[in-house]
Amino acid sequence: MSTEENKEIIRNFFEKWNSKDREELLEKYLSPDCVMHGGDGTSTEYEEMKKFFASLGQAFPDQLIEIRDVIAEGDKVVVLMQDSGTMKGPMMGLEPTGKRFSVPAIEVFRLADGKIAEMWEGRDMATFMRQIGAAPPGGPPKE
Image 1 (cartoon, one colour):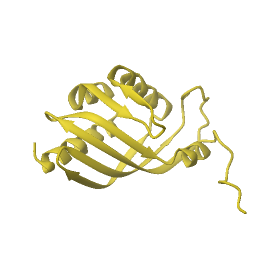
Image 2 (cartoon, rainbow, N blue to C red):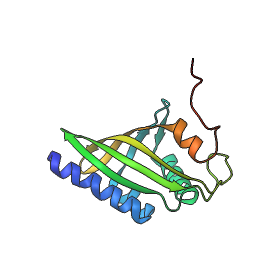
Image 3 (cartoon, rainbow, N blue to C red):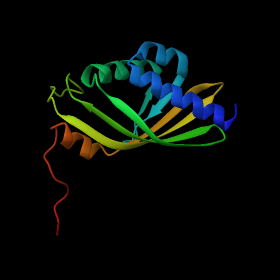
C-alpha cells in the first residue's frame, strides 16, 4: 500500500475510535497478531489489547483523539495528537475521579496488508496521572 493509503487507514482508525465503536475498530483495523508497545517497555498482544481498549472506553467514555499531524514513510505512520477525556470509570485499579485530562501524544504504527501490525505509543503519563488526580500536582523538585 502507498504511504497515502496507510495514512488514510490511520485517520479512519481514529475516526472510528472517536465514534466509540471499538468492536468494529479492532476487527477492521488491527491484525490478529498486532502488538502494542507501551512507553514503559511493555508489549500487549491482540487479546489483551481488546480488554485494554474496552477498559479505556469505560474509564473515559468521552475520550477524544484530535489528530494534529500525520507523517508516513514506507510501512510506518506517525501521528501527533491531543488525547483528552474525563475519568468516569475505574482504570488500572484507580477509582474514577471525575477529572479531565488533555495530553499530547505520539503514536507510531506499522501497517501490513492494510491493517495495523504494530503500535508504539508515547504519552506524558506523569501529566496524565496528575490531571486525573492519581498523582500529586507539580513536577520534580526544583534546585
